[in-house]
Length: 512
Image 1 (tube, rainbow, N blue to C red):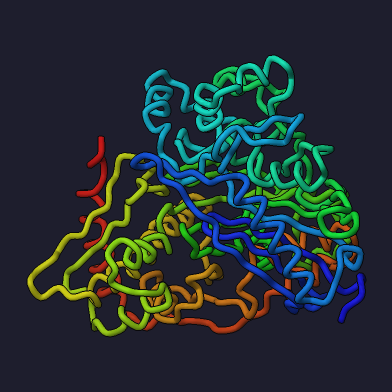
Image 2 (cartoon, rainbow, N blue to C red):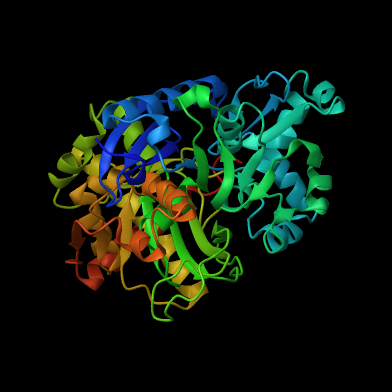
């Protein structure tokens, strides 16, 4: 049993599941719960979630985690929220009912619209203002599509009742009984509507995409006095003091508070982020410039040599890989080669090499550094001798090759030679994958003791805001479980990577 001075609740609403974790002061997990989130694929390349599934599973997990910890809402110092980013929906401000399903970040339905905007010459302005590429990955064209295709949207907009938001905004709206329509600066920076330097909605981009500012949430810091829940949901009013997009939350949870610190989250996709400090980096080589987090009343007077979250706003370079663990799920659910995702590492380890087989998992296009929504999945190098273990190894290698492509671009843009890569996410428990990653990168890969770094980051942002943790304490919460050091020779590393690049060349543009 713990009292309120010893616990913070984190909601971790992801692409394939909703989770809730109660953390103690030393980062110990006091209680946790997780429920699978159904996904819907109404057309090829389209991905949707039912907002009621998101709300139902997330609330249930919060209650279960508290019960497991032996706590009630009134025992919590604060709550933090981490969420899948770019996924967006519309809802009625009066009833709280969503206008149909949410359009998920993976969805490619607006690829043609993005191409139309690119031909019209809008991409340079979008990149300059937002730090993002013109791509269906981001929320702006999704909102534009929803406004045109969701029944009743125009009428609600005319009445001032229409709301649009990413998943954090929707959850906060529900948790506060419709009192607060807010988002944090990290999530806002992923919509392709935010001025990255001014940290407010861009009038120029709102006009371009036909988005009324009345629909959009107020932009808040990631750590601070954000909102307070209605007592009915958790038995007491709980301060919502931390909110961040899941990848930014993981960067914070990893304690990557120094300029140049970087991490890769191995989830449904792979997301590599590098802390670049108090000024946004220019997006080049297929990388994105994004807000990492914003701190309300940033700490001052910290020793110059101590790690800091940096000013009031910290920025990051990001490379987003659309299909990481999702490729393993495809082997499991689509091909039936494995029955559980955990089988992939042992199966891949049975193959001494890939036997010339390469897999480009462009099942929803390719993200950084290629940014091709028309790329399609490719298996190449198959022979009569190809066995399931070769496909498993090719899939693990594909995850690592995509990570290397992003990291190479990041090294070039930042000018920083990265000494190690911090790894988290579900697939980070796969020893074979992380050893292969170290081999194919040529740098150590560090796995934290606490791998739930996304939830930990949300909790840390909330805990920092209410004085539960200091910045120095946040930096060490995740700890270290194991360091994977490179074993592969440089010639073999480069030979394999050149094979991957040849395979990618054949996959690009296939669906155009």
